[in-house]
Length: 338
Image (cartoon, rainbow, N blue to C red; front, side, top):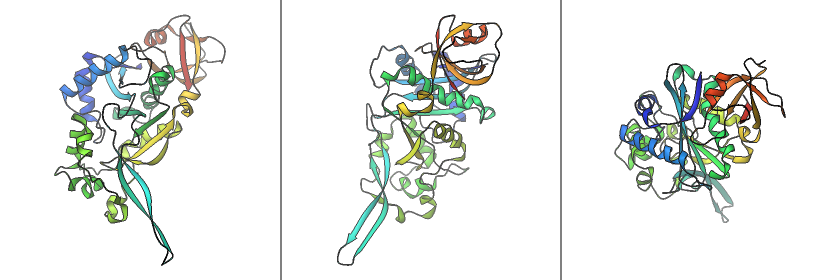
């Protein structure tokens, strides 16, 4: 039985294993014990806080196999991107030049450093064991964060974003980084991403060019990276695309991966989720697969299971499911169909 829950202090050793296995570009999950320890402490404080408004909180979730007592995935919600420092991106928009005398008007795509996305809620840190890729548990790991936002909407923005890891080859080289960022930092792509995860993207962003970068002046291999998803990041992209997230004109400033955006109220798992009252029952006639969660804070739990759900009626749940979700008869439960 796999259950998503908030991270705990004693998760550090297993969390470092997940960080070691994560994709280059998932900068919020660096393989560094001290940084992860601080991240865990900050998350625990966030779940325990009595915040009634959007703030600097970071909510870190882990996916646990209860039988093996093993972590098999993790994901995060940063309540406010850019709360303490600017959240930098590259804005990809056309720059139009014109000559009345020659009767010529020409548009050229250009990349500009910006922090337009500061203030939005940010989904990040998605990683799942390879054996569980493209299973319902990937949906659980990603979408349970959205049910948490639905239950505690006052803590989050009216818009949610996520940065999808951009293209790099099997050796960890990013053509986009090699064409742009490497000229301002004598660092390979993987090392720049590692430093970004350990410290801050601000000090790197501030050394990037402050003037527009005309896309046609970049090598073709770098241009091809703009908005391109790393093959191992495609599942994270696909799950959120089905939730109603869309690409926009912003890309990651290191690898040019796409940024996804959605209005919070329009996200499928939020708009289509329902609440029901739990009725503990030994056997149930399961008729469909659902993602369900309680609406707690530090005791938040979510899982995927087969249910017999009828709107407006109590939701029958077996005792083992109730125990895993920390609910009992009369508790409120949130659910959405997979």
